Amino acid sequence: GSVFGHLARAPEDPILGVTVAYNKDPSPVKLNLGVGAYRTEEGKPLVLNVVRRAEQTLVNDSSRIKEYLPIVGLADFNKLSAKLIFGADSPAIQENRVTTVQCLSGTGSLRVGAEFLAKHYHQRTIYIPMPTWGNHPKVFTLAGLSVKTYRYYDPATRGLNFRGLLEDLGSAPSGAIVLLHACAHNPTGVDPTLGQWAQIKLLMRSKGLLPFFDSAYQGFASGNLDEDAQSVRMFVADGGECLVAQSYAKNMGLYGERVGALSIVCKTADVASRVESQLKLVIRPMYSNPPIHGASIVATILKDRNMFHDWTIELKVMADRIISMRQQLFDALSSRAILSCPSKSS
Ligand code: PMP
Image 1 (cartoon, rainbow, N blue to C red):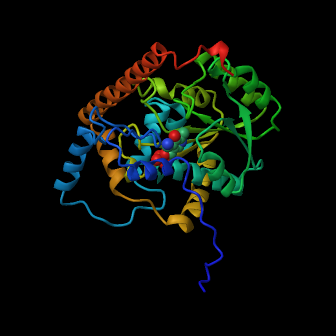
Image 2: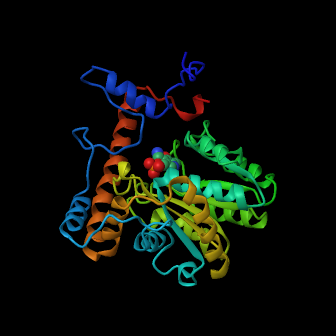
């Protein structure tokens, strides 16, 4: 018999499993509503024109080599990623208080951050919103953190349960880690207003709660990169500490390239450099160093004024189309009375 003969068959991943079922389904009118990947009007995956151009630039550059990147990844990519999320004029960047490491897209950035916290942070409890992206509890639990939830969505109003959120974070133990979706909360699409963010920040700072932002959709919520980064920038503006996991899967359409970054904002440059030295010890035994191609694409685009500008235009086209398709779906369902009015549901 096999040494693995005792294994039970594991269930498919609840999100990626939908794609498996979709691929198997012979129906000509099928739609894949599982994984959140952008599709064109024809239902096809989209590679951005600016990404094709950046790749062409890379291919034409014969000086490019395939050596290993450093443990922390491509230096330009890290610097430009921090600028993108914190803002070009961020004092935290100017004061060298931010350490940024290239990781395997959003998931890998969350995992590296979680492994680092489990090893070096005094509070091992992380609060995640209820509901949240299905992979969050698994990533954090397997990294060694203890996962608790805070109230977030209110089915009665189909909006934010702001009171519940404040109550739950208010009774969290001091120092606890709090996972916040920077924008475009998955799966509800409900984000706090700027006023609510300010109150959340006040409460969290007064209790010493540590913010860990998941920024998987910068530019996708509003169509504007700066607007979607406002929550993060508000927390960084007060000089306090936080972590941010960034993904380029959605906003640059680089899903399979697995390109993202983890930034840790510290109080001083000295602490930031010691944090970075410890992040290297987390990364080296996991995957040694990150892949070069996707990060080179991103750095090429972020570095070049024209390409950056073209990216923001393509990004806005995607965001606007998502917003308008959602409105059309809502209107179509409403006109067929498939959606009951909020007061009747619960
Ligand atoms: N966080 C959230 C909230 C997400 O929705 C996703 C992807 N669906 C991710 C992180 C991670 O995605 P990736 O690893 O592909 O960047």
